[in-house]
Length: 307
Image 1: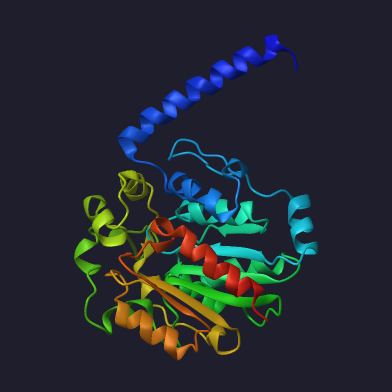
Image 2: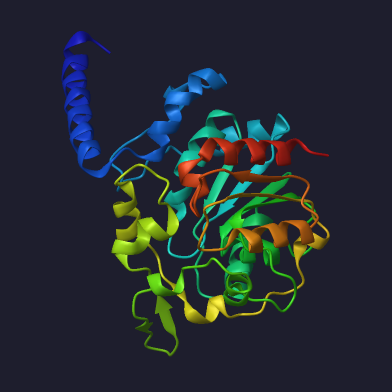
């Protein structure tokens, strides 16, 4: 590539940087940018990921050849399952660091339609992955990973990130109310009736940050509130099946300021599941993978290397 070709590219890069800086000043930095500042001390090159406007795709997915190479090197595939009122981008800080460390990663698009429906969908993704797998779920995503293993021997570990770990017959709604300290119900917007029956639930946008990630010092939560995905009311009230944590080792991480799933409920579920390691992040709220992605990645790595 000659100098004449490089000049317009350089100019475009500078312009893009200025635009991104302008957006950052308005929206607040994406959590992945904050994480990148700490990577040099962790021996990770920040240039291994791409950051753009908070409302656009932010990372290059690992190519099939990279996935195959990582599998040959003994690294399991990390499958991330988001919870209610969020989407796959809620894992961006975690995805960027895992990719930089050489792990194959799949951030699944959780349908949020019902426990069995969603678990079957994630199970179909897991079945197509070769080699060992670590299933990671956030919030309602914990219900999904609990039911998605279905005897798949490739799933070596479950990681619950501020997540439900229900026993057979339990629901997310019941578990969230079993202990005091929850504040989700007043933050819900009026239900949206679905054409075929049932209701979709959203969080009120002006309460999203306070409810989910009040510890994140960033206006980026406004973007997350605007792009939130609804969950059906039925999904939160659907009984869970036989739990995978009874046969698959599990790890837990959550914040001590979580008011979506109260800390006593999270502690109860972790102890009941026989958690291999439970990490309580001081000062973290429900979106612990957004505010403390480094702590979440560290636990995933320990789960991935266990056994």
